[in-house]
Image 1 (cartoon, helix red, strand yellow):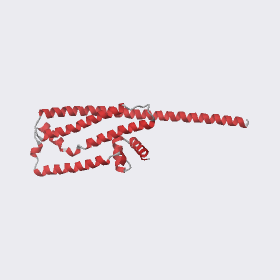
Image 2 (tube, helix red, strand yellow):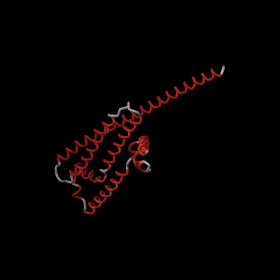
Image 3 (cartoon, one colour):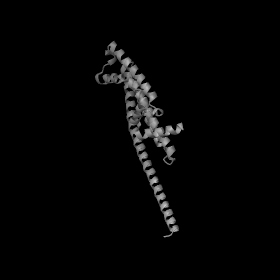
Length: 217
């Protein structure tokens, strides 16, 4: 075998290796895409189920308010909880719309930003629903009225009213602080990263870091 034959064999081998690498990269990209599509499909169905539950809650709360249209603590509590249930329903509908509008034929970079937008929306919805925690006593007022038929507020002593008022105010401050801090731009903070990771998943947190780095550069 002369030098020319060796060169030709080397070139053919290099071309074959390059072709194999390109095929493997295409297969890997396709596998990642299929995984993302499956995750988004699961997320979409989860939002549909949650949206259905929120819709049922909204209907039941409106029925309760209509049947007990007074200025009682239970009715006011039902109105507050209904407001958050409507927020949850609207958020679930928004999530389903965002996921349905994703075009998988887009370039990977644009597709990642669309997925990032969906996850940001989910985080915002979770934070809005988190703002309902200061109104925890509303559940107690409604349960006592529905199950036992009495107004809990009228049976509370003055010091207990002050205790629940102060605790609700403190919880509102904490919830508002968390609302401001839980943001993808604060993803480098460990506790923020862990909390967001719990809400939207580790892979999506890594995606947020990648996009944040692109925006900064």
